[in-house]
Each structure stands twice: as structure tokens, then as C-alpha cells.
Length: 522
Image (cartoon, rainbow, N blue to C red; front, side, top):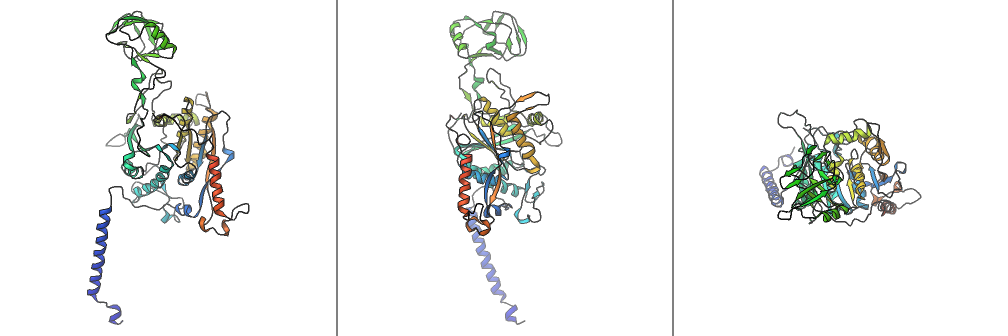
């Protein structure tokens, strides 16, 4: 209890503390000067990070779940497991090789089942903890979760690759800033607003939510034009003011009337004279008919055009007829509002409307005959986005595959003379992979019976199935005797490299994952 031991000089302590405070203040000032504008959050470590440090993630093939068809169509990949581990493996085999990424991550609404495995409390909650809306680390958990995966995804994209991310207003602002950081703000393309429902719930006193968003970034800025839809429906006017008036006979099956069923009497309609009475039903006239107007073409020119596949459209009762050349590639860029719209079958051989959540639920119900997934995305949305890039052979990745919509959409597109290949990644939380995603892909490939007992023809294609796994119990570089692997191979690094090569060889076969990706953008 000597004073010299327990009663230090108070003045000295005060001065020392002042010095330390001043030093800390100077460091803060320097840090503030260096700090750039951006997103700041508490980066919460995820439980698996130790696994990644101490073990090598690999993809283990499950041959029994492979689907094989000798139909000349692409071979796809479905990976079951944590998408972080899968993305790590894909960076060995597909770095810089992915054309398009689409993901629909958890929205972090507080009730969507988003689970985060907080490394600090994993011993208490080994299966992770659900993140309610009032959780103090709600945004930090989600941002930490997304950042790690988006950084891996960025490295998978080609230099001209595109990523689409579906999101709602819960994390939209945070995700935009995060993507500005990861993909660079200069590579931001657009926020697309998607009309997700035609029957929004009326529970809120403030607003009814009808829309969600799709963030779009490129890996590197380029001048490619995105495909949205054919320019003015792909049609051009056949009338030309000042030309000589002439009669032209039009075959009934080559003119589509975009008007309601009606009867049209012969007579003058604005600048066009109809010389026959006709009945319009389901978009077509009941017989051949003659029009008189200031046409660009003669009868012979029109007949030649028809032989080359040209068709015609009339959009109103003014009868101002327009032509559509089969090989006309004129189009306009996509609008940033994605809505449901049906294009004439003469303009687009398939319906080009983008559906809603209700549409997607019906798609799944037709396959499974029951509700199997909440809030799915429609295949039409994925097809619409993927077709921004008009290349015929692409690799499309979805590492939040959920119900398998992206895989279904890509196989649909392959019916339109595309040769795309998909890689889907999903965990098996709540049996989503084993009960929904894989069965859906299998049914689309082999065919299924819908709710009306009608047999839906399968689309073919093939599939390889993988699961994420690990080798090595300790750090790979410091492997001990316990890390000796099968067949007497005691060199873990050589074994790891051989597995990497095997994965590359399996996944990167030309027929499977290395197609000729030369194509014309837009």
C-alpha cells in the first residue's frame, strides 16, 4: 500500500491521456480526409469463412442425378450447396467466361426467411439466425452476405458481361451503393422497374406495392446496343404520300388486323379505299381483298416480297397498312419500365409479354399441381432480360436459383434457335433443390402432365448435378498426416490441383461450357 505503488502522479496521467486523445484525434482527421463517399456498415463475419480458410471447396459430381439426352442440345449444370463455395469453385473453371448473371437474392424484408450464420454466435445458433426487421445488424448482415458473393460473381463475368439483380425497396438503396462500389458506378446501366403484380395487397395505409426493381450493371463499359423490341413492331409504312394511286390485292393470311372483330364495308378509310366487304375475325380477313392508295410498291413487288416472307399489319380502322420484312433486324432499346404487353404474332412468333408473380405461380402450379414456392419470378422476365444480348450462344449463371425459373427460361429460349447454357446454384434449405428446383428442370426436359391432364412435350437438353464439398481438415498449405487423401497420395496440394483440373475438364468441355460465344450484341 505504498503511495509510490498505488498513487501515481495525477498530473502525469492527465497529460498522458491528453496526448493520447490528441493523437487519436489526429488519426481520425486523417481518416476522414481519406474516406471517400460510399457505403459504410459493420462487416459481420460469416461462419463459413473458417471453412474456406482451412479447406478447399470442390464440386462433387452426383452421376445418379444426371439427365442425359443425345439430342444435340446444350448440357447444363445444377450445383447444390452454399453459393459462396460454389462461386469459389466456379472461379477456378469459369473466371471471365460468364455472359449474363441473373439473381433474385433474399430481399431482407424481415419476414422472408433470410438467415445469417454469424460467426461470433455460431456455437449457440449452428443453423444461423433469422433476421427480423428490428434486428440491430439487419442491414449489416445482408450487406456482408451480398458483398462476398457479388465480388466473386464480378470475376466470373466476361469483360462485356451483364448482371441483373432483382430487389425491392427494403435494400434497394443499399444494394445500389454496394454495386457502385463492386462493379463501379460508371458501369451502371439502369434500374428497371418491373410490374410484379396485378393484384397488390391493400394492407398498407400508405401505398399498394405493385413494382419491384432489377438493377443492371456491366462488368466493363461498352457501346453495345441492348435489344428491347422490334422498332415500331418491326413494321414500316407501305403508303407514301405523292405516289401514284394503284390497286393492290392482299392475301387474307398475310395481313394481321390489330383491331377487334368487326365487319368492314367497302369505301374510303382516311387515305385508303377498301374495294371489298370483309369480315375481321381473330385478326384476319375472311377473304383476299383489294386496297387502293398511294402505295410504294406495285402488285409485282408486293408478290415478290410475300414470297420472301414479308407480312403486313393494319393497326386501326384507318387501314393504313404497314409491312414487316422477316429479316428486318431494326429494333429499339428496352424501356426501363417492364410491363405486360402482347405483340402481334406477325411481329414476333411468340408472345413477348413479361408476366407477373401471378403468372409465375401459375407456371409452377401447372408443373407440380400445387403451390411449391412463394413469390416466384416468371420465365418471361428472365427471357426478356437475357435477350438484351442477342448473342446466340451464351452461358447464363443464377446463384440464387430457388425454384429453377432461370433454367426453365433458358431451355425455352433454346427453342428459338438459341444455344444457351445455364449454371444454377441453390442450397437445399427447406428441400428447395430436391423438391422443387431439380424436379422442375427434370420435368421441363422430359415433359409433364399439366392440370388439364394434357401432356406437355419435353424440351430435351441435358444436365449434370454437383454438390459442394471440401477436402483437407487443416490449412491446405500446412496439411498434416490427417489430411492424406485416398489412394496413398500424401501430397494434398497435388491432390487439390488434380481435382481442380478434373473440375475444369468436366465443366469446360466445348460441348458443355465453352461454346463459341462470338455473336452480335443487340
